[in-house]
Length: 137
Image (tube, rainbow, N blue to C red; front, side):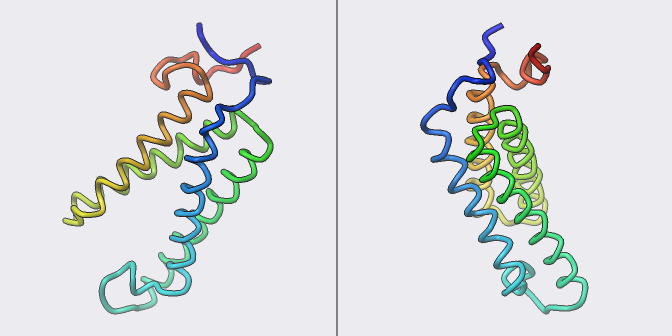
């Protein structure tokens, strides 16, 4: 097994993925709160405001936790959050396809791929192997 010890330093390039990712999540939250019309592309009603609030809460929570775990150098927690963010991006890309928002899809997929790659490098093992998810111990 080639997993990385918990005390090993994070790869130096990880902040270059996590910081812009957290900023994009926070920006999405701010847009959802201040300009929900940008999300709907149409008329704003109560339902749009409710779902924009949920999006803002989700994105802000993820951004804050990404920054927090990065600052602590908490390898396992950071990698798990990165996988969660990547999975959300994959599902967002699927929704982009279903709803015909093709221009957004490549950026969302690149974002997901970078987060998956970074998480795997933090753990030192491919994400599809059970060793990546088991506590070392």
